[in-house]
Amino acid sequence: MAHDLVIRGGNVVDGTGTPPYEADIAIDGDRIVEIGTVAQTGKEEISARGLAVSPGFIDLHTHLDAQIGWDPQVTSVSWHGVTTALLGNCGVTFAPCKASDREFLAGMMETVEDIPKNAILHGLPWNWESYGGYLDALEQLGPSINIAGLVGHCAIRFYVMGERAVEEPATEDEIRQIAELAGRSVAEGAVGFSTNRLPQHVLPDGRSIPGTFADRDELRAVARAVGARGGIMQTVSDFREFDEELDLIADEARMARGALFSSAVELGHERLNERVMQMRAEGLNVTSVTVPRSGGGVGGLSTDRFFPARVPVQSWDALRDLDPDARLAAIRDPDTRQRIVDEVKKLDDDAAEQARRWFYLGDGARPHYTRGLNESLHHLAQAAGEHPVETFLRITDETDGRALFHMRGFNVDLEALEQLIQTEWAMPGLGDAGAHVSQMIDSGWSTFILSHWHRDTGVYTLEEAVRRMTSVPAGVLGIADRGVLAVGKRADLNVFDIDAVEERMPEIVHDFPFGAPRFIQRAAGYHATVCNGEVVLRDDELTEARAGRVLRNRAP
Image (cartoon, rainbow, N blue to C red; front, top):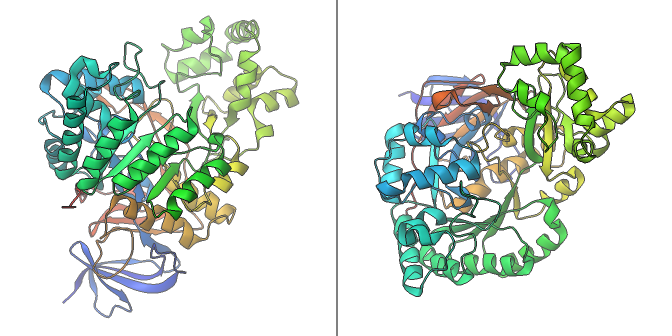
């Protein structure tokens, strides 16, 4: 009897860190049933000779909570080999939610994560109150890939405390209710709880989001309740109180099944490594995620961020109402171009200094994310004897308006980043897929790991790169049946050409509800992606298969 799917002769990188080996893989239903020399034929067969075969990648930090409502294929991550995405990071979620709280939660997501409020309110069914009901709603949407979720501090705190949740401390009874609701949400399927302690993440009225200044005892109470149900704690800290925040993360790891936090080289990877390795030596399950390249925005004539000037420039503002072709025509008009240059030059040195963090992505098919710090827009202008705005306009003109610039906000020093991502605890990720959609696009982080940190630099072996994107995050989430290629495991796989895999240039599209803009980024080199035994991507293009599942916490 034929197998449902056979992948023939691939270079199997199984996710455990074991060196690759050549084998066939047979799949029946959603399970791997044979690895080795498969004698039986498949109803469908994929030739993987000369190609790598890995588990599907797991993205530990997305904000696809809203986008999945109108884009169940969850692009762009699904173009980059991701077969499981974690929603609900940074404390901002849409459940639990009373009907009267929907406007509040949607407005908060807009200001924190740059997801349009109208799209959220009209693009989601909003047919839930509990977190379990929210997961039921996601299941009914039929996503192309697997979805797991964290329940957010903001939603729970507002559910319990109402308006007082924003700025007031919780009473002892409210802390009990918050912890109880967090534990119940995990029992209903959330894999854990997320909280956000960054004061700059604000509501539409400028106040910091609920939970930002919550007492650490409140979070410890939550960790105990979440841990009793087998859940994890995810914390976004600002680390102004470095040692105290790491003490909190350690306590969360002691009380819950594990602790997940976000890191960047600007925090000092050596002192972070010292503290985290102390925790791990204690036997604590502590993991971090970081963007595996410089994190930040993307700007160019096709976006609303034309040039690194914080001060409004009248000539720039006049372009924002024009379509890209009209914008290009405007900057090619000598008078308009000179007005822009003159206005920017009248600013203080702020614009020129900010240009030190803007890096041209190039004019090729593959964006250039790894330029040296001496290759910024500022340095290009110096070499050409120009002001940075003149260089920006010249490159934009020469590329017929296509030029895009990467605005490095954190992980700016790639040499320090190389050290951070080689620690035992810092995993690549933090692509923020589904958030900041008109400002940035880091959804291709997994493809960047394969192309840059493995193939181009050799910092990771192929097996180590794959391990960090598969079995390690699967362990963080407690997903025992995914993340490794082995008989009996779920059939989430990638087939890719390691010599060809790479990101494509970001592009702006207007496919959100009400025509709102967002960046997308495609990939090259993916021969196939399989999710639960079904081919969801073939030759870099998504199929119509909607094979994903909602992966719920199953701990007692």
